[in-house]
Amino acid sequence: MIDLMSLCAFNAAYAQTIDSGALERWPAFFTEKCMYRITNFENERDGLPSGIVYADSRAMLEDRIAALREANIFEAHRYRHLLGIPLIESADEKGARARTPLMVARIMHTGETSLFVTGEYLDRFELTSGKLLLAERVAVCDSTVTDTLLALPL
Image (tube, rainbow, N blue to C red; front, side):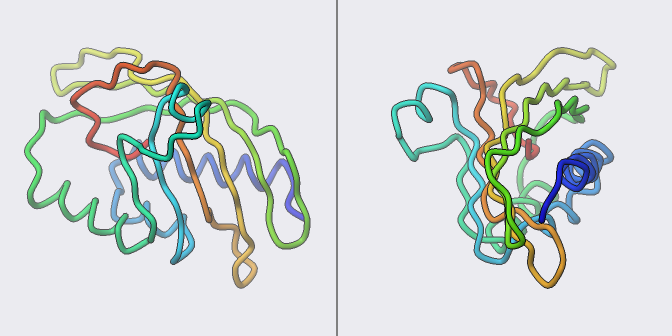
């Protein structure tokens, strides 16, 4: 059965991958057929599936990173994730559902640091060949105002 420690370790590795800039490794945290969305609390509350970012496969996540590296132009910055302890809603030997509070600081190339996002991850994990992977991650932002510099994954 999936336990709290394995979810904490997974989330720590996930955040470190993004925060260290190793974005090419980020899609490997997901199953081949997955769902990744960034949305806000009003859309999630009202059952609206639209999102600021929407991907329904690992290949789409890989394309997003390739576009960030090769095509998109945005001001240089990085993130620092602060994650809370996951609240496990259900778990068995095949997978788990959990909610994890998050705060993300954005550090600009100038050194200016600001609180960028608060919210929570709504996750569905699967054990695939003995490895814990995300089948679904919805990053629900507390604010309905989206910064135009949302380039990196949350």
